[in-house]
Image 1 (spheres, rainbow, N blue to C red):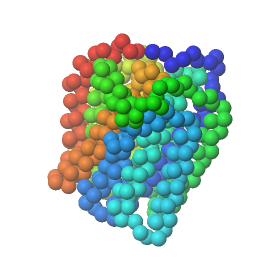
Image 2: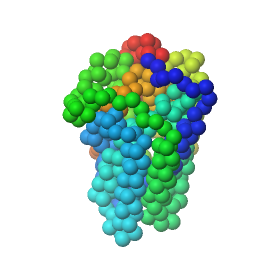
Image 3: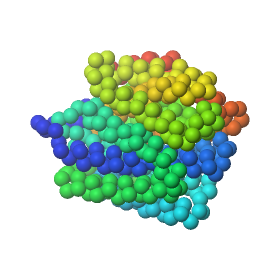
Image 4: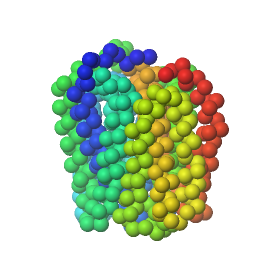
Amino acid sequence: MTTGTAPKRTDPRFWYLWSATAISGLGDGVRFAGFALFAAVLTRDPLAVALVTVAGQLPWLLVGPFTGVVVDRFDRVRTLWLCDLGRAVVMGVFTLVTLLDRVDVAVLVGVAFLLSCLDTLADNLSQALTPQVAGARSLDSANSLLFGGQMITTEFIGTPVAAFLFAWALALPFAVDTATFLVSALLIIALGRRLPSPPRDPDAVRRSVVADTADAMRWLLRHRPLRSLCLLMGVLNFAVVGVLSIAVLYALEVLRVSPTTYGLLLALIAVGGLLGLAVTPALTARIGARRTLLLAFALCPAPLLVAGLTSRAWVAAPALLLVGVAASLGGVVSTTLRLRMIPTETYGRVNAAYRLFVNGLAPLGAFVGGLVAQQFTLRTPFFVAAAATAALLVFGPRLLRGLGEQV
């Protein structure tokens, strides 16, 4: 399906959305790394550390399906800047609690869960707004730019900066995160003054939230290409998050690097992600979405196995870089395909149903990663992730067979 007639020139409103996601992404990167380092300071139990990641991923399963109804029923711009303000308030309170030295693992888990509840809605809103502001850009190009800007600020800048800020003052990373959400809210408000409201389903308000969500689930299950994409990307998410949930302990205890170097290792994953983003539009144009996704799956098993076997940071670093390439390839292609396959007026609901499964497997991956690391070694989650991504290579070609009709 098409997403509407593109204007003859690039829509400048795109850069409001790009700037907002990039700036809030900077704060996210600082916060994610800061939470991981904070958890490692409080405990060296892999399962306890992983629970912070579980809490940050769980809302995709518990809250995510219902955010789509909000996206489709309410003004998307206004709801997005309200999300940013809400996240600023939560982080501001957490910064104060940190200054008062009242933080423990339970507090980290609670704040991670609450923020992620708002993140699920904000992320869905940003994706739903993309076709309205993409202008003459293709969706591949627009999504690559949005993902690229967010990845640069979140992982390439935010995570290493977090390590320096955390070493300077425990509360400083979280104060920075608070400020980024406030700036993002102002940019979205500015965007709203330049953007008309999208078409709405006039019968939507008469239906219950549960009925709308159930309809979206049925739509997804009946759509074979989207259903297959959902399954495969869910397994990839399970594998990657399972490794990331214990990455801080893996870096500190297996690779024996400093917290600052841990931040640099995360930044290196982002470098791989940027490489993936840079080549995605050309790659999909040349070999198609299906083969690009299969390439993303093929890049994962060997690097994950190498990272699990080595104790040397210089060996793990390029392996993790390749995982970053794979994740960005899969993320951009799958997002673009969803924007093409799902009708605009129901995008929020169906996208939320899709992400219920894809992101819903993330907390399971984080829990499994922490559990196997606790019961065995910090290397074991890498072996589990390598096996899961190898399965994608076995079943992926058949499941994606019908994808050619959509691109």
